[in-house]
Picture 1: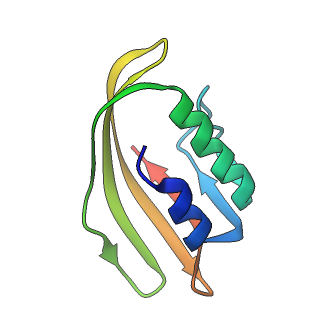
Picture 2 (picture 1 turned 90 degrees about the vertical axis):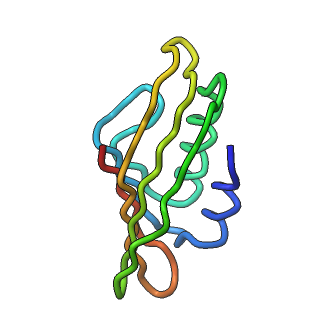
Length: 104
């Protein structure tokens, strides 16, 4: 699903934090460290049966942060087809992404 892992390896700080709106079977509320964030992405991808479409908006950029919307239409194993739409907010420190947070 996309090249998220490649982007994370290139752009995220080793001690980055990823924050979800809540704990789910596919992802915990908080994930710390790049290796754990990459593993979270792999678990999420493995839970997808079919990706029907995915759209990411152009970013809105500030001095040390940026945001975009991401919409995923997918069939999730054991849950059926669903659409997930989130506002993704990224904080940049020292030229790397220090945190990402997803808002429904």
